[in-house]
Length: 117
Figure 1: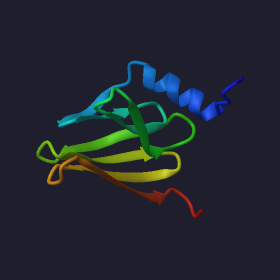
Figure 2: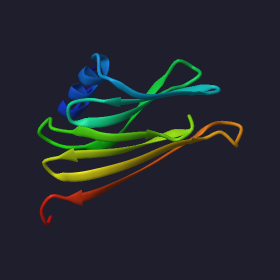
Figure 3: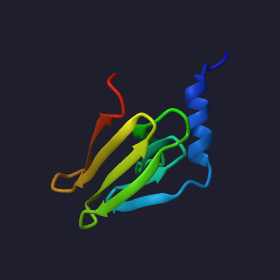
C-alpha cells in the first residue's frame, strides 16, 4: 500500500530537514519549540515528549523571496517578526504560554498586501 504525499508536503519536509536559520528557540517542559526561516516560509517546529514533531507554517510567500526585516524576542516567551515579500508585508507574533500544565503555542499572522487582492 502506498502512502500518498502532496508535492507541498515533500517540499516542506525537504526545507525543514535542511540547514535553515533558527530565529528563536525555547524549551517549555515537556516540549521544545524552534522558529525557523526558509526561503518562502516561517515555520514553528514543535518537538513533543514522545519524540514526535509537528511543524506549523506561520507565514508563506510564493516565489522564495521572504525576508525577515525585524525580529524582537519577547522575554524568552516568544518572538515578533516583521517580514517583506512580493505579496506584501507580514507581521507574526508567536508566544508560548506556560501557565497551564502543558505549554500552549499561540501565533497570529497579519498581511498588508502589496496590491489589492
